[in-house]
Image (cartoon, rainbow, N blue to C red):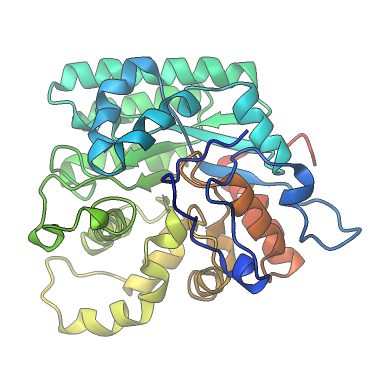
Length: 370
């Protein structure tokens, strides 16, 4: 079964590991590949290390109207190819997990979802519908799937209430939010009621990329920069910085957010953030250095970045307890991600923490394989 959402007639970008081995992933790397392939670089005789994946997407037919917003970010033929993969919760998805050693996936609606809905009442209703539909699928396979809540951030208090319902009644592990909502970012003080609930529930918020509400001039005439290649990292990094510089984590010091894609470039910037803040104009006086908030309140996943050097940078700058494995299914190749993390130059303790221990502790995930 080969059905990854890479453009046709293009080789996938090689990971550090595949380059070192002198190999290249196939032009259309299969989401589903053999267990032997995904573990070919494991040390002979070593015990398999479980994996929890956190940025793993799904779609519902009733939510496709919102998903159409992503057409501007990917090739049209890939959009059509994505839908049957995203809407599958059964054998196709489970087979991919099994064949690549992924024990548990926390599922989230592929964005932008209801965050682009102009009618707040419709957004609230559709978010609840989405969460109930996901809960039904999770209930069929609770040992393999968990859920991130989909929230109508147009209504901060309503979003807080829906998050609480999803966590306390549906057993969800937190929420995934696709960037800004109609131009409003999560540092807005109207969201304090939401963050209060996040802290009370002790669940993380996965801050996932989305398009900004405007289209900055720097992207003009360069559609390849608009979306996953570049602009999403810029937008999500800036969103995380807004949370820090607004004093959000001084007001809610135990709040936790998760950033995908190896931290959206932030791991390389800690020193400079601390160095340049004192000479910058500031709206809010922070209690700590920016790097302290990044280490205390931000966790990152490896989704979509299968690079040894980037991983080592993330561990060294953020701390190994803040780095977790993910794939970004089905937009990245599962075999590439799984075989890379199995072979990455890590100690046993580092690999265990990244692959499953940190995520299981953060979100109270109990694996049957342990």
